[in-house]
Length: 200
Image (cartoon, rainbow, N blue to C red; front, side, top):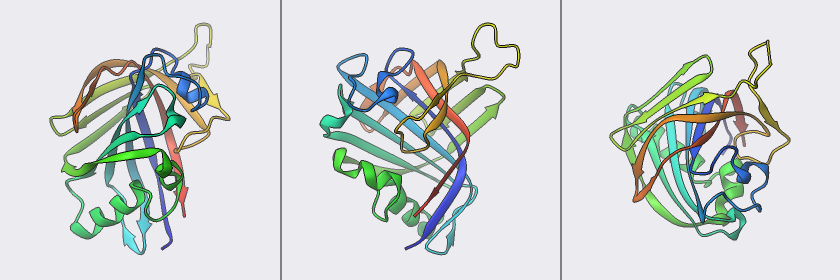
């Protein structure tokens, strides 16, 4: 049941800048909930011998104010370009059925809202990252470059507990239209990384 994948990642959530949940899952969100969209652009990888390079996955979650309270509601979009076999393998990874980071979050998920196929586009242009998932999700975030930083390097969270990585770039939502699996919200903040690596 071995698998591995590498690629880029982008998310936007409903918390104000900067999301308290990213500091620690047991710190309350800005509002009475945290709603988040996680988008994975898989550049290379295989799951149980099946090549999944070039495919994309998006997950949307609705969680309580304190994420560790559990009872998350989760929906998953699989790239419409995936074959049935590839889609099956991706579902297993992203619902935590075959280990890895998403399996660690499994105990927090109270309701699986479903899996749908959709056209997923991800564009990375320097510090700007845009995502479109079918007609349900359309957002853009911009990595935050701190005032006075002449190198142009954006600010990063380091040492965080996050399913993607412990070191992610902090971003701000510039555009947001999100309504999927009955979860609707305005993205305000975000995270990104040009390189994540998972294996199990």
